[in-house]
Image 1: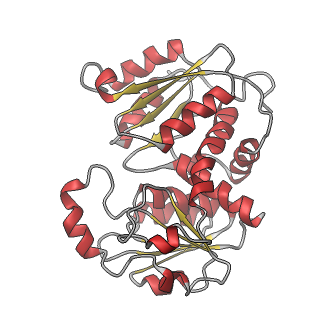
Image 2 (image 1 turned 30 degrees about the vertical axis):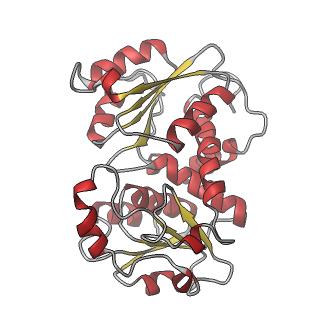
Length: 305
């Protein structure tokens, strides 16, 4: 049984609004306490990773710890041994566990069995660490997130779900434009409403982007959807974030993308590489946001707060 007081991070709305602000504040510490000195953090990757692995490993190092990254074939969750058993074992070695998985319920079982914090590094349902980096990036750019409007153009996927929930927590509104059949699920809509968030869904990218302060998108086919690439390319025709679409946003609007970007598909090269793009700061902030999150979930260690 997970000890009382252990904080897992599987979904961004497991944080309150004030806790989310605290995580973002901790992310911006220039001299963070080395709370992981002499300790390890296990990082399990069922999916390949560039930003997540580098960002998380470096965040652990910056807190004085030792990251141990494990590939799918080394751990084989629910194959060689149950995911819950792996979580119990890793809890004996490490101060925290991060996992990038296909199925969200696997993370839930790991969290139920672990005696240390479990962090969702990505699942089919959510990408909360990406949302933290997105919000940190926008806060750095604007200072205040409340009252801003974020437009999402494309698949209402795991990245989108976490972003809209995070936006609701900070008082920003979201408009989502997706082709029919690729919109936001009802359960996430209900959660946004429960947080008091403002959410508009449409099938028209122009409607979503009009006057928005930020425009965000992601690839049309994520990992695990390779068989659907062509059908998705047809479905998302007209949903490319290009210069014409960006011109409908506010004149000072910024562009976000979690990367990797497919130039000429979901985004034009002129946009992702243009002056409005914050994608490189966004990518760097994956590291800073992870550092802040680890400080938060390890707050029982002396000197974190």
